[in-house]
Image (cartoon, rainbow, N blue to C red):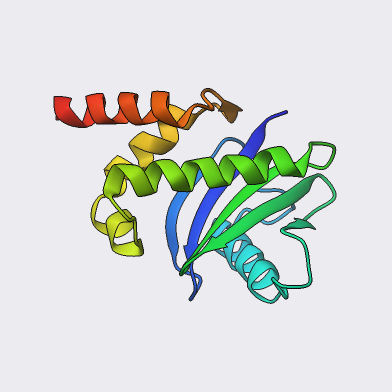
Length: 147
């Protein structure tokens, strides 16, 4: 069970956060075209009648969730349990929300280093490190005070 990549895209498809733990699937070495394919795939889905999981390639499944104007996307193995990762996206957004105080896209744009700090406390090498919101908030607040 490992996460292949984490993306955060806005409603127009602009990339706000990215963390690759292994290269994007497929034969294309162009990351921009792969990100555009991912955005096109998830933005065209009917979120009221379709699930938040979709196969992206023969080895990768996308788990995504839209919060306000942002899509949070995880690339995972086909065999992995999607609901675990969906709850993990929710945890990430909750921690960002508590850390920034009602997080918005501008927080991710102008304080991207803090958003990456939160992501790095959650994941190391594609592996989930912590699942407690309180522990995560304590850690990131401590690190933020050090700056």
